[in-house]
Image 1 (cartoon, each protein chain N blue to C red):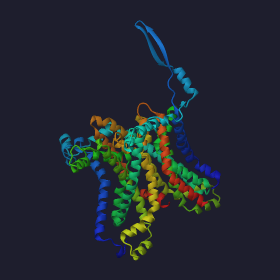
Image 2 (spheres, each protein chain N blue to C red):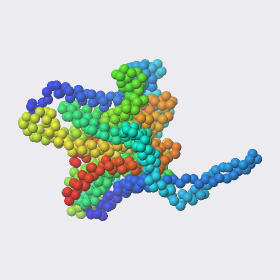
Image 3 (cartoon, chains in turn orange, purple):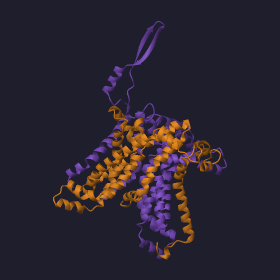
Image 4 (tube, rainbow over the protein chains, first blue to last red):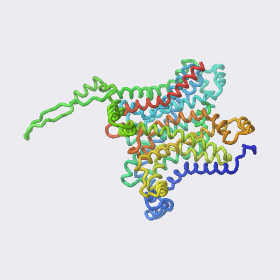
Length: 293
Length: 341
């Protein structure tokens, strides 16, 4: 876009800038508004009389003596013990990401290094599995989990999430390993390594960028899951997202919507930090599958 | 790589998918054609000082025996598929015979849970997908014209609606469009109707859900198209310009054809994801106005009595729906594959 002939006329430039500003407001404003409102009382956040109440916090001042209050957070984290759900979520995410990457890396590497026809079919089957709504599988799990008495526990949810995650992980890692020259491990094999030794000593040291990107998406899948965790976990083992859904059922009647608002903001914060640090990896991960075909 | 080595490398992930994806599909299929055994009831006459009473009780022994003899339940064939909660053949036939216009027929269909959910799921899928592709493309063109420093910041904020948990994102929007929330206030001010509530109106609820769908998925289209824009061949653009193509013509005849494979990719992913729409319905508390296939399954599975057979049947129908959606892609891939060998 350096040459003068390609420079845009002023009118178009202004139009594009205005469009981007409107898009930014749509994308970011809801989050900022909810963050701001989470420190108010319910009558300010949901104001019948005047929407500016949420900005000035008149009723918050009247109730708590200051325009900001952490009452919602206190109620959610201490009274409703949201911290338990937070711990559960991070346990689930940690194990899902590590397990899923370990077995996914082996599988994805094998798919990229084998030239046989079945590789194509395995990838197509994985694509079909990826297309299935997860909830259709859950109705298949439940009777078996009840029979075996493994319903309700964190490890059950972790194994299910790992399996559901595999098709996507395989596709992503397959296309990533394709981009690592085959000569690398071939020459290691010529020097007398077995396939696994070649993988261990030659591929593992150079695979981290792709593995980290895939790991981010596995983390997102586990963190954002509602369907599996809501139906497979019992109440005491709930992760954050089903806990928030449960808040809605119980707290709205008690007039404590602010607990749910505070919990929602708490659940968004880690994602915010993640995008902040890993923006480049997320963008490259989203485009990897697309640009390579 | 040798078959044997491949086998060992692929075994863990293959096993995970076999046990937790392939078997459950079979299990869902089986459940959808079997009904659970009804408990065997026995009537006993209890005579006391105040006369005789007939009591019915569950014969545990006989029930257990029945369950052991046929652990899958009793075979129902396609009975569950045909009942009122699913394809409702007799109700549909009835409606077809008794109504005299197509409009009346469809409104009769709208009272049957499966068709109601299907109507919303399909509308959501086929309205959201093209609109989010268009919005994503527009944002990508806009961001591409910004200077380097602003780009990072804009991309950061643009990613948020997509990255955030669907349930959380829909709750955040729902609280804003609540009649007491900031957007709800603004909309009723615009419409000059203080009593306007999005929650009370079915068309408005559908529109809100679709706007949520576009809002949450447009960033994905944006990121993919933005990456595609970086690879547009500059030579072609310049020669088009020398030949006198206007700015719009360059976008229409150079940029869009270059991005076409990416549009197919985004459309494929988004059709799959929008077809499973579920969380926004929970977040918007919208089940009175809009239900989806996934929502029906969830509703059957949660709650006091789990209706496993009903859920399994809806699951099979959903899987068939996904297969129909995916079939053009699969057929094309199959042709490419055959052409390549």
